[in-house]
Image 1: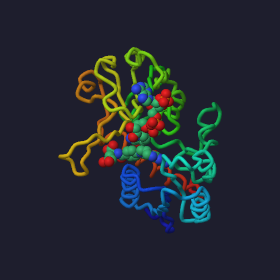
Image 2: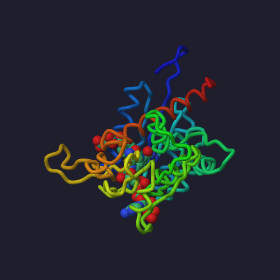
Image 3: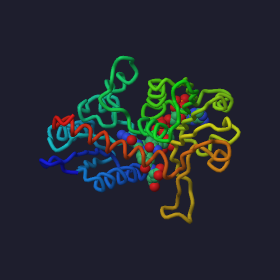
Image 4: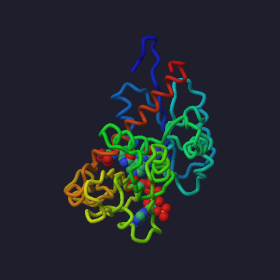
Length: 269
Ligand SMILES: NC(=O)C1=CN([C@@H]2O[C@H](COP(=O)(O)OP(=O)(O)OC[C@H]3O[C@@H](n4cnc5c(N)ncnc54)[C@H](OP(=O)(O)O)[C@@H]3O)[C@@H](O)[C@H]2O)C=CC1
Ligand SMILES: Nc1nc(=O)c2c([nH]1)NC[C@@H]1CN(c3ccc(C(=O)N[C@@H](CCC(=O)O)C(=O)O)cc3)C=[N+]21
């Protein structure tokens, strides 16, 4: 993706450990970069690496002018201080949008984060491109994690939805969810949302990507979402499948954030 004077956007990924899930996601992201003509670099650190090693890898990418976006693959091993590491990502290269300043700006009216987190941004993009009105609609977000649920609920509020958040301590989640025009399921619990949880005509975004054992599949497992697709698709007016729904859109948003960051770096915006 060179422009007329030869600048190419660049993404760096820091991956700690060899978790199978992480490897799959990282492979997807790097494959997508290649397809789009975005240069990518990866720093793979061992499971037992020190915090300093991660911070050093970050520093290298901060100083590298060919890198416009940095992603630290989460979750990190327990012994590493995730907050400290995310806080150390240079704001201008925080294409995941997980730096506390970007998250804080997302949470405050009158402020604009430099980057929106990719999954929430993808959810909004899917709604807008599908012609789903958000303003004034009731939305329920199932899950409140830093990387999906919380920023998604904030972003939906920015688009003037009336937002409820359901989490592991919520009694009668189905009753709350049944009120919603828009449901975003991000709990990481396979088939949590049944058809009976949905208002007829609701729009459902299934963020969950849960591996379940299936010996007939290539790696001995297949992915299912947080929503019971068979049931939900009979009640919903629109629903994203898993795989092939929110996941690939998340990756596309990462590429878009990287491109925007490169444009900013080269003063093209
Ligand atoms: N498609 C994509 O692009 C992406 C997909 N994912 C997938 O999305 C899912 C969620 O990921 P992530 O946010 O990182 O997960 P986390 O485990 O960090 O967070 C899960 C959230 O769901 C809540 N929760 C757990 N069980 C229930 C329940 N039974 N009912 C209601 N809420 C519940 C938890 O509540 P509490 O806070 O009370 O513990 C928590 O807030 C996973 O399947 C993950 O693989 C994640 C990122 C991107
Ligand atoms: N710093 C950081 N940023 C992230 O954005 C981040 C992360 N850490 N840690 C893990 C989660 C998970 N995540 C996914 C991205 C793409 C798919 C995706 O494309 N899934 C395909 C299928 C993948 C497969 O076949 O295994 C699909 O749903 O069709 C899924 C999940 C990003 N995450």
